[in-house]
Image: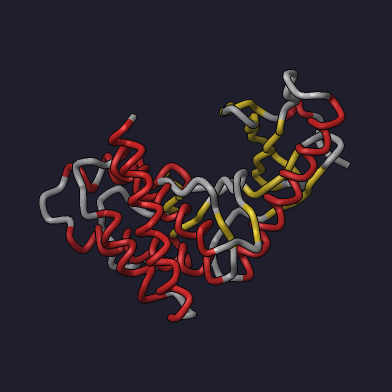
Length: 238
């Protein structure tokens, strides 16, 4: 039986969902509630919402199978339009970590290598298992149990990175989907971290090294260049 929503605190709201924090089964928990869209036909809204919740749960489970750290799912309640999932404690959003630590230090090469190798490895694992995240940004990655002193000697990808918010994710994807996923990441990095222009190229280098099917990754790289070219043309013409 699920907790009363009154026991949870609303901590965020986006275009698609509200996020609540509280305790479920004795564990710190987030509830992601996909609220009703009044502009859609009621029956269509219910069906689409259920499909999105199922797709998000499938993607998270597939990501875990691929070895990508994600929040654990405790419960999916389709009638209440909610997913109950693990609240990651002692964590900082990667964007905030970069803004607070990386952007304010002079000697950050090793720190950047840690971040870019981590992201490149995890995205390669996702794509190798045909999981498309759909919203790859540094706001959707957490670093857990990491001190803000920037000391990375004792850290590793498996224990310190967590990818979150699979609300736009899907499984069983095409080469084009993976290329678009990478292009979304590139554009988000240029927007969020313009002071570190090498971020994406370093992530992409690791991605290419870590992608398990070398023939397939060559197709992805080729398709990515096509997507990137189309994107640049759109930016030029407005």
